[in-house]
Figure 1 (spheres, helix red, strand yellow):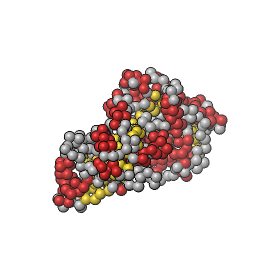
Figure 2: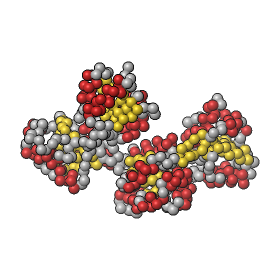
Figure 3: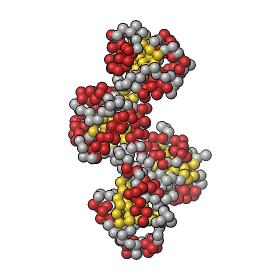
Length: 510
């Protein structure tokens, strides 16, 4: 039976959406959404789902409310399961009740899935508890979106001023001078602590701490604009003590992740946990070989090789995909030694039941060669499952040392240019501060999609980070010097190097 689900998307942090809302979003036939603080929610939708954007950002409605209501009814009557995705909570200044009433009038079944409202989440992320035994035992949620030219306000300002409640105003920046003046005129002390929290729970969060009398002027000086919440009350005094989120070292820093979409999640998660605003711009796509027969042949005779050398996690994954189709598993490596170029590749093997016999101290082909030479690789049969296009240092040096080497392409990397226009817009807006490169192919493909002149134009405000010396050399070949390069050529080390650089830049050091 068709049904409409009114889903709360929460305040912006994608991990604050409920499990139920995510499940329903993933299965819905039709998704109708407002402007969202985080567009990642839309990546969870089915590829064949109907997607409707209806706006509702700062008074700019792509579709008026009555048209939204009609759309929900029409799609449900067409037999669709509809997910109506709304920022925050559907019933907290979200007009969800009006949509529910419309659905009932047309005999359409509906369900509400509450969301974390920004009124609770944004102050919490800014270190402001809405209630506290010493300061406030109640809280009031109030719309700040009133027309100041109306003959009288819908609010009882005297009641709000007398109350010891924490006051939280939604959509109050535009009318901030009127709100504060009304509260003071009604008897609230001009010295009452007040705060604005902008883009709460997101990587762009900022908070401004002031007093009721001064916050309007301070907000204007500091350029505070919607979306911002106004919090009034003694609990605001706890901000400096409890402000945990805004202490994150990369808060507000825009970081471009050029890794393939399949591999980007660990980098993005690590960076976002540190406060970064990640711009996912996968410059490569990893695809299997058209003909799996050579891989199948190698998999069937693994025992005939003395060494199998994996040079990437992708190589492990693609090789294992073929092993699975052949009904093979880790036991196929019995009697064969295995090398991994680095800890991530070794972890990929371990997850599949194979412990690497050798991982070099430096995670480059040259160090694998030296390590295998010291382990008597001369005269041994060596299989290297790898990308179709890759550096030839490893096989050439092993051949020179007398090993019998077979290079086995198990995947190819293809350039991706999707999202280039959006990234250039972000660059022009000054929203990008770091670009990370995790392989030579990410560098080459990046500059296929983005002209070097574009980066040169923004170079003063950009820091370029390379995972290792090989990637840095490729970057130099395109006319740029790497600003950041970790001593260990790993993703965690690269992330930490970006953090250290951000701290150095903040401290005014070069």
